[in-house]
Length: 206
Image 1 (tube, rainbow, N blue to C red):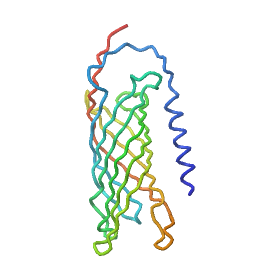
Image 2 (image 1 turned 180 degrees about the vertical axis):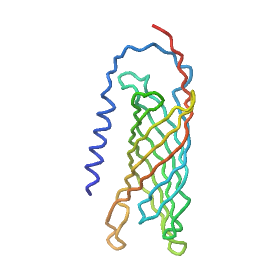
Image 3 (image 1 turned 135 degrees about the vertical axis):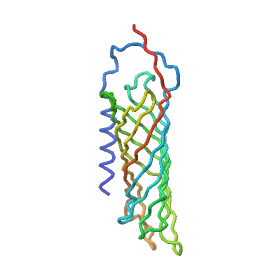
Image 4 (image 1 turned 120 degrees about the horizontal axis):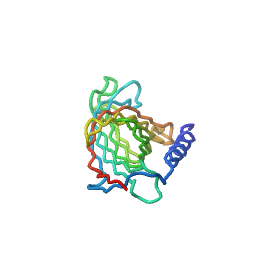
């Protein structure tokens, strides 16, 4: 499968970009009054990679910044995400459903005015139901995903996020007799939502 080298190259480029900022910068010192935590939710629209069907659903995010950790570039953090796509199915797949739970690394670049772009690489677990009520199928596996987007600061602690994600579900379709893998499932789509950032910094001059 040709997607594996592309995924490995994407991983390498992501971490190269994340490590590029200079760690020693002259900035005002700050005290953190609350954990560097962000929690949010959004509405997702995805192509589940089953023919020409589509799905709608909801997404939950939990982001934790690692900026205070020594020897790590500013802007790097951890993300936990969960998504349930269970609505607006096409008539060709009336029982189609996909849900995932994943975690990984997220990197936010320096903010430009009220905009902040980011990229991420996640791994997790995916489940899907497909077929019909007479021939219902269920499958699950470990998945990987990569994506990114942009956040807009709408208020002091409230950010609006537009997110894109491309997923890799390996060895999905198997031959009914030989049980050998016959392909890969690649769901992809967008999520628009809101995050609340609990980290409030009080800056003091050096």
